[in-house]
Image (cartoon, rainbow, N blue to C red):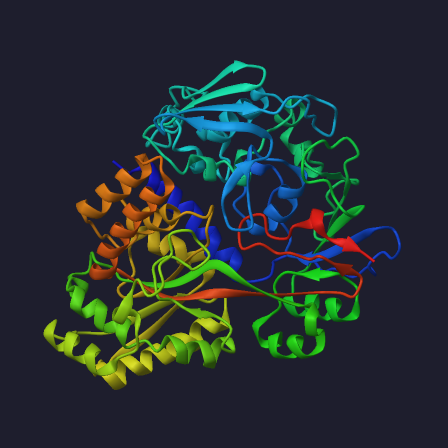
Length: 534
C-alpha cells in the first residue's frame, strides 16, 4: 500500500524544486512604485492559486501569508508559537486540543471560529476537490476514507473523522499516529481558515481572497500584473502592519525584476539572479539582503538498479564531489557546502554530521570505489533544464568521476522540468539524479521522513531508520525527539542512498524607500508587516 507520507513527498518535493528554481512564468511589472502613500512593492513570480489549500507555491505563499493568520506561526529561529490560536496542546501527541482566539473576524466581517478551520480542512482533504495541498492533511484521522487509493473509487467520507468542533472556539484533532511536530505543521499556509462565502464560490474567492490576516485585498487579482494589498483596519492580531499596504508585482524574467529594483520601480526583490549577484552587492551596498535558506540540493541514487547497491560506491561518489570548488565556480562562493542531511537553519542540524563522507577526498574515494568493485556501464546523470547552474555543476561532477574514479562513460540526461518529476515518480531514471528539498516547516522530520522514509524515491529501505523516525514523532520533548531524528540521520549517512551537496543562499535587495526588510527562510518569506516606508 502506498503510504500517505509517500504521497506528501511527491507533492512537496515537486514544488520545492520547480518553483524555487526560477523566478516565474508570468507577465511583467512596470508601474513606478507609489511614493508617499505609505505602501511599497515587491517583485516576484505570478502565483498559481490564492486559495490557501490549493497551492504549494512559494510565490502564492508570499500573498497568502499576509492575507491569512494560521493557528500557529514561526519565530525567527523556527519555533512554532500561537497566532490565531490561544493554545495547541496534547498529552499523547495524537489527540490535540486547539483553542481559537475569540473576537477575530474575516475581512468580510464573518467571525473566525473553530468551524472556520474545520470546514477549510475538510474541503482541502476531500479528494474529489483536487486541492493542491491535499496530502498535507494525511496526518489526520479519516484522510484515507476521503482519498481512496483507486482514483476512480468514490470516497467513503467527505469529512475528516479526526476533526471535531467542540464549541465555537475549540477544535479536537485526532491524528492517525502520534506526531509531535503537529504544531509546526499548523504553520503551513494550507491550514488557514476559510469564510463560508469562499467555500461556496471558490472561483470568486480565487480572484478576491477574503482572509483573517493583517492585510486585505485592494481590488481583484490583476492576473500577470499585480496583487494589491492594504492594511486591514479591523485586524486585532499581533502582526499589525507598520505600513499602509504592499503590492506584489508579477515578473516573467528575473533579470527584468532586478533591473526594476535598481531603477526604483519596485522596492523589494527576494531573489536576485545568480549572475547579477556580484554587481548587486557592489551597487546596493547595505541594501543587498543576504540570508541562509532551507533549500538543499542532493544527488539521489536509483537503488532499484542493482549497480548502485553497494554503499561504498555511493560513498565514493559523495567523496569525489568538490563541494567547495562547485560553490566557488558556480555560486560565487555564496552557497553553503552540506555537512549534514539537514540544513543549518533547521533545529536538529549538527555541524559535520556527515563527516568525511561529505568531504572531498579523491584518494579515499578511489579506495572505496575499488572496494565496491567499481562501476560497469554508462553512468547517467539526470537533472532538469530549469536552471543553467545545474548543468554547470553536473559537468564538474562528471569530470571528477572520470578523472578520479576512472568512470570513462559519463552521460548527461537533461530532462524538461515538466517531465522531470513524473520520471522520478515512475522510477525510469538509470543513474544518479539531482533533487532538492525546501522546508515545509522547520523540523528535521520534514527532511528525513519525506526523503528517506517509506516510499522514498531512491527505493531505499531501512527498518531501524523508520522505527527511529516513528519513535521521534511520538516523543513530546523536542530535544529528545531531535536526538532520535539525529540517530536516524546517522543511519542514512552511513548508507548514503542520497548525497547532500549544498544549501542555497538567499540573495535579495531593497530600494532606498524602505527599511526593516526581513526575509525569512521559511514559508512566510518576506515579513511584509514589519517593512517601514520612508
